[in-house]
Length: 235
Image (cartoon, rainbow, N blue to C red; front, side, top):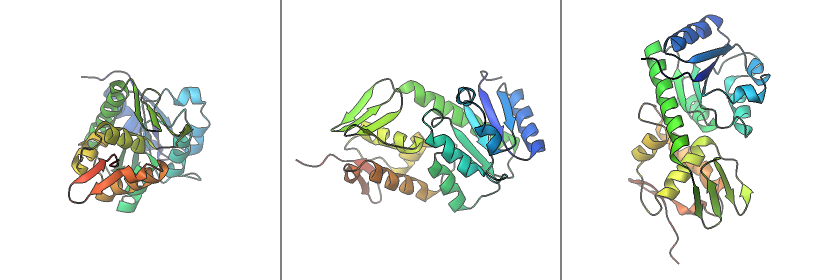
């Protein structure tokens, strides 16, 4: 059964692959556009970019690679929340960690089957659309102020530049203050069960999050062998 008409942008310098992915996604009921370079995408007006529910992005392209394009999109408030799946032949653990730390929602090594691609697309869209619908209020801890509607976080009134995953992990930990969350729980809730994430991805993400939320970084405590906890200091 076809899914609702969600707009997806496929970015790859291999025209044949682009058109093949476009065809199969359209069969599933998606509205699909293609682009053959990062530069072509970045020339699009922001009003057009924000209509996409997902970007499928190759890494190894022409002058600007996919990592750089993703970093630019994530640095702009208007496009920072667009989900991104990297589809690339760069399949080392370091490449995957780099891609996920930029804020990508999934990383699919080439070659991949269309069946795998469609499953991962559905998983990311289901997870990201659910996340935007769940939260409709404010989350505070001392001078940390999180607006769950517009996905912003401030400390002492200064807005932080958090990636999507950093933001979601902070929300998850604050919503479960003083409760240890295992790695598996965090990975399942933030990345989803269908996404393969290397073990150190969560460690790197939390290390960066700790630095960004200073002086509250020390509140995110590692319980070795168990997981992570946002622990309120004993007064």
